[in-house]
Amino acid sequence: MPLNAFWWSLFVVFFRGSSSTRRPHIIFILADDLGWSDVGFHGSNDVRTPNIDALAYSGLILNSHYSENLCSPSRAALLTGKYPIRNGMQHNVIVDSAPWGLPLDEKLLPEHLNKLGYVSHAVGKWHLGFFKKAYTPIYRGFASHYGFWNSHQDYFSHQVQASFLPFEGLDMRDNMTVDRSTKGRYTTRILTERAEKLIAAHNASSPMFLYFAHLATHAGNFDDPLQAPQEAIDMFSSVRPLKKRIYTAMVWELDQSIGRLVAALKRQNMLQDSIIAFVSDNGAPTTGLYRNGGNNWPFKGEKNTPWEGALRTVAILWSSSLAFPRRVVNHLMHLTDWMPTLYTAAGGNVRDLGRIDGVNHWDFFTRIGRKQPRHEILHNIDDIYQYSAMRIGPYKYVNGTTFLGCLDGWYGTEDSNTRKYNITDVLQSSVLASLARLSESEVLRIRETSKVRCPSLIKDNAQLCQPTKQPCLFNIHKDPCETNNIYGKSKKLIEVFEKRLAEFRADQVPPGNKKTEKAADPKYFNGTWTYWRDLEDSV
Ligand SMILES: *[C@@H]1O[C@H](CO)[C@@H](O)[C@H](O)[C@H]1NC(C)=O
Ligand SMILES: *[C@@H]1O[C@H](CO)[C@@H](O)[C@H](O)[C@H]1NC(C)=O
Ligand SMILES: *[C@@H]1O[C@H](CO)[C@@H](O)[C@H](O)[C@H]1NC(C)=O
Ligand SMILES: *[C@@H]1O[C@H](CO)[C@@H](O)[C@H](O)[C@H]1NC(C)=O
Ligand SMILES: *[C@@H]1O[C@H](CO)[C@@H](O)[C@H](O)[C@H]1NC(C)=O
Image (cartoon, rainbow, N blue to C red; front, side):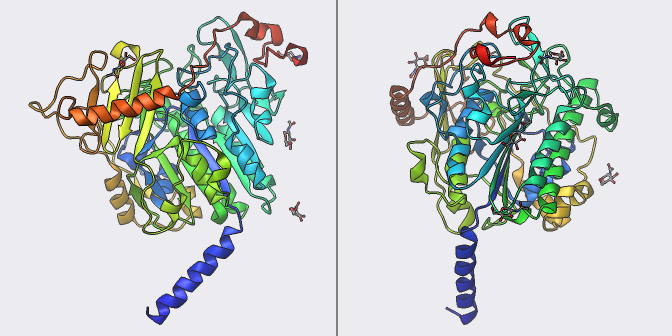
């Protein structure tokens, strides 16, 4: 080995060795209902996301990252490292007035990290249960929580209208205290301010875990679903119709938040020692319940379906420890993988995490020549909706669907090309003011590789996919848009899937969903949503 290389490798060993004793800060940002093409780096010019794009180009674009297809199951998978079938989270969400939550025998990511010396904070949406105090973030490993316990809220009044009952109440908490002080202010901004404060107040001698679960870009209440500050809406006056203009402003506000967070970390001298993840909890509900008009182009389906439009999500990882940043990676990753990956990055041993479904990707991300660790994903088994979906290698199997197939179309829109991608916007973003510079050609190169392209329908090869009549099979590598059903081409493959699914099915627990209760009505609690089953402690 040439002498230079020798000294270099010694330096690397030394540097890695010494830095590994310093545990990184972990900033996990979860976007809500943000669609695949609601970010500029996937190829859309219709949105303006310079900060998110800058973070993506500077780190890794995880282009085969899969979430669950709905809010509660995704959050459960992220914080437990387990598939939702393991703890009864596999069907639908925790509806406002239903007395259940993520089971208390689950040990969550912040609890594991706290053992390594982390201070964990939660900002934003919870949606893992609040009918009893013990299910809320403060009791589940977070030193503080600022935000709301329900699935969504009005972006200004912070009131929550129940999904299926005529109930309404305030849902904004500072730890366990109801917070009325921010009424009238925009949720995305309030949450961002809290995250900035936490970063500014953090004593960097201990590592921080910040779980920042945005409301954006989920819809608000039924009476006023799309909301953004007027000055942000006015920035997009050329975007039509109005709904799309407001949604574009909601996305812009989310993007501003990412810029401010990175700047706050830089100011506090924490950025170089931070891991930042930005992930969407599921695809956009373009047309369905709580529709936001978000764009999953070019994928099939939308939130709450078994298709790529629901499951394959925007995902970015940035860290100064990445072996090869500034690129798109296409290996399979699932939400459950963050727990072992971040725990390893924090210096923990995955064996401490017990039996989980997640696999550790940290070595793959930070060491050259490591093999990708994941080859299959159980997307879900839901015996109430009656569907199952699974991925093995490039193949995906789907049996049954949701809503009798009413959301099984393609709802995204290809970029209208009425605007050009503004590279200056990215190069001048606050994220790039804090991270290493990028060149225009680098931006274009990475953006080009992050676009997903789909073949057109191969007519003589494709069978109609009618998943309620017969399972469908796709080769996602060749056909990410799920247009060419190849069921019937390979009996063997179908057998492999059905055998594997039977194994998972044998190991699932029944869904934990409960019926809604009138006792949850905020009218009994001075107009606030609260832990109604712990009555004696309520307001
Ligand atoms: C929330 O808890 C944190 C950590 O214990 C504490 O610093 C903060 O003051 C609390 N906030 C409120 C409003 O109680
Ligand atoms: C930060 O924590 C360390 C270790 O506990 C302590 O020595 C130091 O005084 C703290 N710094 C501040 C500014 O509180
Ligand atoms: C497909 O799903 C249905 C409903 O869940 C189930 O009854 C059927 O056995 C499944 N088919 C196969 C081949 O597994
Ligand atoms: C592009 O972005 C820059 C920086 O934000 C801005 O000054 C400029 O007006 C934008 N150009 C267009 C055509 O929108
Ligand atoms: C009840 O709600 C009102 C606002 O609607 C508030 O002013 C008052 O302080 C609340 N009372 C208690 C006991 O929290």
